[in-house]
Image 1 (cartoon, rainbow, N blue to C red):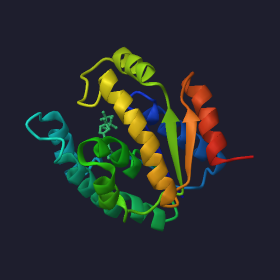
Image 2 (cartoon, rainbow, N blue to C red):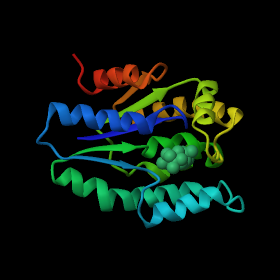
Image 3 (cartoon, rainbow, N blue to C red):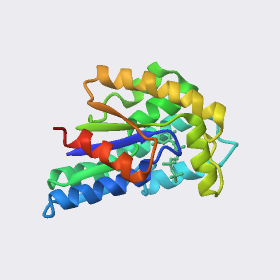
Image 4 (cartoon, rainbow, N blue to C red):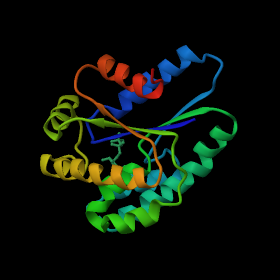
Amino acid sequence: MFITIEGLDGSGGTTQVERLRAAWAQRAPEREIVCTREPSPGPVGRLLRQALADVTIGEGVLPYLFAADRRDHLDRVVLPALARGAVVISDRYALSSLAYQSLALGMDKVAALNADFPAPDLTIVLDLPPAECLARIEARGGTRERFETLARLSEIGAAYDAAARVATAWGWRIARIDAAGTPDEVAVRVAGAVWPG
Ligand code: TYD
């Protein structure tokens, strides 16, 4: 079972990965649950994080780094865990590239770069208006990343709609969840998508 969580920066993905881990642990205490993330903690992910912080690296370089990191992350973490029978929950995956990187490279090229990666069993997109995402980012403080301005988040929000259409055409199962409200309220909605009925 491979579940990916997606959404704009500030939409609460990292929190919901932890909530979903707890929900799985309660329902299936014997099951191994692997929570992971992209950019990955591995060597290509580390390079990618440096690139994201380096303004001399153009937007046109990033799509390739994200795709390389995804391949490495699949090979090191995701596929071995799935082969062991674990539940894998990833904070971001290829839908992030379709949304964020399509702005620099165009959807067709980003889709081509990502078309061969395995489809998750379920992709959850946390929907939150860009202004609310920015308010949450500001509330948590720290440094802002290059995608974290209102204009940028609005563009990426629209790109997520296009990305969801592309991934749906690939046969991906996508659930869009209203991410407004408390973490507990959103976690209930996420659980409703993972365990319908
Ligand atoms: P993020 O999860 O926000 O990392 P952190 O929690 O350490 O800040 O990811 C970093 C940024 O990378 C985020 O703005 C989304 C972006 N991103 C892409 O542009 N494309 C991708 O394929 C992925 C996985 C992330």
